[in-house]
Amino acid sequence: MKKLIGTVAVAALIATAAFAEISMGAWLRAIAAPVAGDGDDIYSGMTNSWGWGTRVARVDINGTSEDGKIGFSMGVYNDADDGIAAGDNKVIWAKPWDWLKISLGRWDYTTFRGDLCYGSWNWIRPENWLFGDEGLTFDQLGAKSGMQLELTPVEGLVIMWNLPMGGKIGSNWDKAYKMLQAGDVAAKYTIGDIGTIKAGWGGQVWGDKEKYGDINVAFDLTAVEKLYVTVGAKIAIINGDKKVDGDEFIKVALGASYQILDNLGVAASFGLQTYEEYDPSFQFGVGVNFSFTDTLTLNVDFRGLIVGDKGVVSYDPTFSFLVGLQYAMSSNGYVGIGFQGTTNGCGFLQNLRYDDKFAWAVPIAVSCWF
Image (cartoon, rainbow, N blue to C red; front, side):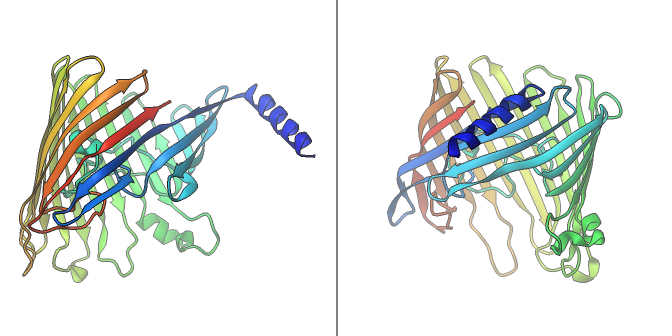
């Protein structure tokens, strides 16, 4: 019986493949730290750059019809300690016309996100920043479970409307007004070779919460060869009757990367966050990539976080650094080893704040993509 079921399944897959394309891929980066210190004790452990365990295997599966008008995406992740789980993508989509895409589900939608990733973002993240390299200048709008419409009415213009809703009857999302409150709307227009202008709204469920949502605006400059500049701002819209001390108000961020030589690139970023009552806080960073050969690359970065006084609470400035070597293998992976340190920061592996102490780690990274 098992052989029969297997044969039928294979036959069905072959028959389906005749009318559609099923593709699989993967991207992975796991990091081990055989030694890491917090100022008192020495630890060891494995992690992802973004924390949340250690993802050591995954499969991303995509299906697309022969004419490219309908399909699906899904992911299967396997963490070293937590076993197999669903990935970021679980979505079915259709394009009844070239200018409209309708998607149902949840997916890692990054079309509007404003990124500038470098240095320690790709190793063990010291978390001494207000907002990360992904979403530095523009939030990841449209990554909420539900229905999403993506329109491309003219060349260079993309409009997105995400409507969050649950897949189970009786869930918190079955009230239509909450769907509208929590929805995301964004638009971007690419102006030839000059750059891209973006604007969007990230909604939140109201009710007992004081925040309605955020307005995002950004511009990415690509007019100068080998130079990329991104600048953006986010303004929180808050219910005046429910404002509390520490409510985030205006965020401003900018970043730039420049490939000076074929083997030398630099990147830098800055961010400022203002609050309703507290003093503003800001972050900064600078990174360098230098390739000794086609396979050996040096990563260096330095980051700083200055947190403003929060009422009776104040924090010392937090600084971190990275020195790492990456050795490229085959055409789809690398191994790396480095040294990272942070002052008054979150430390490494433990993700706890260690005031007045120096935390450090020796990361060993393995990454691959297919």
